[in-house]
Image (cartoon, rainbow, N blue to C red; front, top):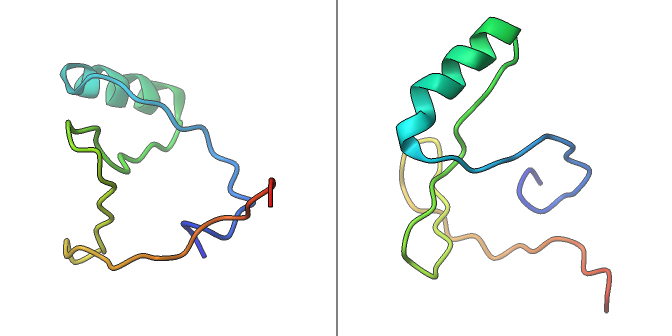
Length: 67
């Protein structure tokens, strides 16, 4: 449900890994909880890992507004 259930309203953004410590420091100073949820790679494939670090076989999709 977390990945395909909808109604998740969080701000997501990408940033260079070279800025990681600056972003964490800024978030801490503002009292904003922040989590790293992934990384951009050169692969065209989406890989989803479970909490144990193992690849999940994920076939669910979100709501299709155009069908």
